[in-house]
Image 1 (cartoon, rainbow, N blue to C red):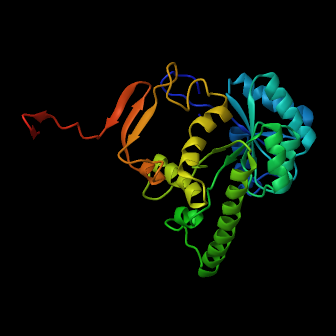
Image 2 (tube, rainbow, N blue to C red):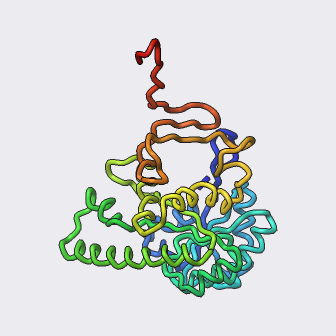
Image 3 (cartoon, rainbow, N blue to C red):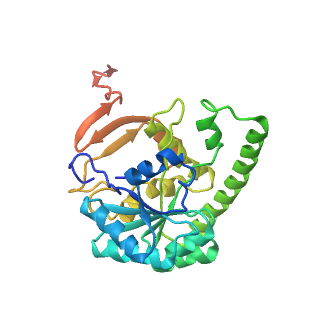
Length: 296
């Protein structure tokens, strides 16, 4: 995510993710599982261990606590996480996709829910009423899984057909979620989930391409831009430093040739980059000078 270790390179670091033993890492090679778990994750097994996991991350000076919620995570455990994190003045971001996990995050008063694909209208309303952000993450739209796997993995025709079918259902579900969110008044930001290698694209190019899929789901371009700038800044608690162009904030700017409010895909064609007040890239043509009626 985003460490405040350097003024010109803001990153909010979450450290090791908090998970239950039955989370999505259960298919690891048994010979490597414990080593990977110890390096990448902190296990939650009861409220006391949940608090200890937060304290261990806080000791490492993390900026945010990240949790994966699944059917094994209880409200009591996640509440222990949020209470301990808030005591340390840290926000809690919860990866939750299915309805049960989303409800656990809502009941435990998480600060944000990442993905939230299966959120119901009632759950979106609860999030709105409790001030919980929905971090919309259209990762698998536009046959994303096939694009990142086919160059390196042999996929059988049957598996490919199944993946195409599932992608269509997911896209329809996500498009409907976007429309419901826009009408609900819930606070939302957007994330790319770009932990993948996307063939032929840099991490930044792939991230922008993913976020633009929100436009394809019916989100107006200005709302997409707000979701990845000022709304994301508020969700992270950094609205006093990033998200808008104002005195006293990080001078992190990009410029494009066209109008992204009219065509949000202009964000894929960055011409100018300023980081911490320093120009990193400038491919914008200099203005032409007019001399005695002629230009040069």
